[in-house]
Length: 178
Image 1: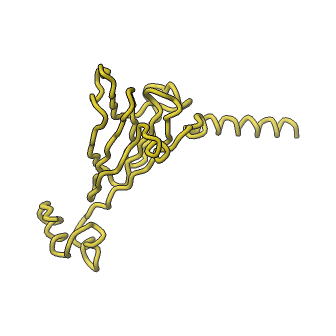
Image 2: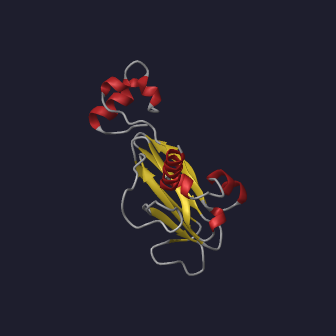
Image 3: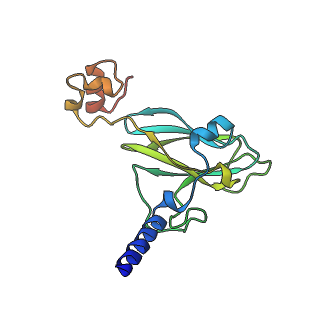
């Protein structure tokens, strides 16, 4: 019985160490950072199949916002120096210092549009201060219109079209007249 308990305990420890959210206790959330004037991300807009995000860093520091699209999980790459057991994801570096680091956007913000089917997630775990870090924050993407059937029975409303004809025209021609 003692061996079984010890084995179960060690399995539990392995499970805790392998999950990124459990491998690092993120001190903040994106919403906390917005309220405190710290580096954060704001959803500017979305359209079918894309979302536009603004990465904001009003501090005199560097902030590297990692992102992942449609829940993609990295299983290899450069080991993350902060989040134990995870890897560094692609990101947006916003450096508001007088002399920005190479490869970073100089200034206090950068706006980017991402193509995605469902969502884009952003976290801050690299950059100036560890107490600014926040875990993955989801930004939903408007559903993409697949075919004319998606425009029927009021479906056009869900895609932000003014009428069914606009929706059908978009599907058949690729021209968006919204």
